Amino acid sequence: MEGLILGIETSCDETAVAVIENGRKVLSSEVSTSEELHRKTGGIVPEVAAREQIRCMIPVLEMALEEAGLEGGWAGIGAVAVTVSPGLIGSLLVGVETAKTLSWVYDKPLVPVNHLLAHLYACWLDEGPEVALPIVGLIVSGGHTELVYMTDHGQYEWIGGTLDDAAGEAFDKGAKMLNLGYPGGPAIEKAAEEGDPTAFDFPRPMIDREGLDFSFSGLKTALFYFLKDQPSLLEDRRTVADLAASYQQAIVDVLVSKVLRAQSVYNTEGIILAGGVSANRSLRDQLKGKTTGPVYLSPRQYATDNAVGVAVCAHHNFQPQPIGKVTVCPNFDLR
Ligand code: KG4
Ligand code: ZN
Image 1 (cartoon, rainbow, N blue to C red):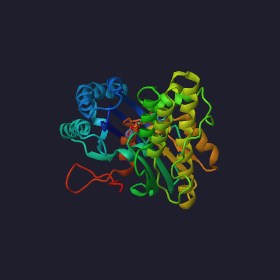
Image 2: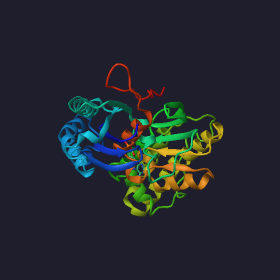
Image 3: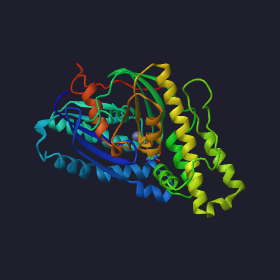
Image 4: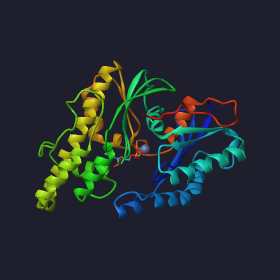
């Protein structure tokens, strides 16, 4: 669908609104996060996240409209797209009810969007080259580690994923054990900059096992017992940096190895790397260094949760339905 699409994302602890032109140009992208509140609890409390969504939704919407130069000018907007799943139900409801209201009041079609697809589509922007299909995509976030084979818009096949923890969860829990704070991914990445990734030999779960599934709980447990036996390691900043770098390297090795295997099995030229963990520079660089084909990435600020991908996904998948204004985005119920 050409023209402007307003996207809304509230699946977790970010309240985000974006306005996208012709599926590629970001006119505005506003994100408010309740990360600070969750830092106190060392993780997300769903009730707290949902209440923050209520507080932030309207101001973020107003800011995004203003940034796009659209204050009051709804005539230019062709559709309202919103994340409907997966996510925390209390948080999702805030975005969905807001989108439904806007659709009703301004008489715009409503496009439900899957959060994981939105992550994939954040790689389809002006800043990057046109994505060539078919392609394999690796979506790595706080709650998901999924491999997808995409042959066309609307045609996605789930081809593998984690059997237990997600990659982002491994980062978050590892950072907690290393006393690096929350959220763990950026904290481990920062600490790892000064560390040696070969200093400690952590397991690479399932790396040699056939297939495209992942497992990260064993890695987390390995770090737990390693530190339980030698808690004094945490007292030395240099050692913590080595631990962070080695732990990060174990995650990166597994992710890179499995997505390259998927690329080879499905014989695709390129790879999409998406989701919050794809902000990790080490992961980005190592993947790019190990494949000759193109690696499509979102700009780093759109790797973690935002509404840009929501609107871009709607642009490529908009299909008006006979039942009325609500349109259907391809379902992406993974397993
Ligand atoms: O996609 P996202 O923003 O939210 C979910 O859908 O879950 O992903 C959040 C996850 C968190 O686990 C966070 O620690 C991780 O992405 N993350 C990172 C980095 N930035 C965010 N992991 C590794 N390196 C980063 N730079
Ligand atoms: Zn996400």
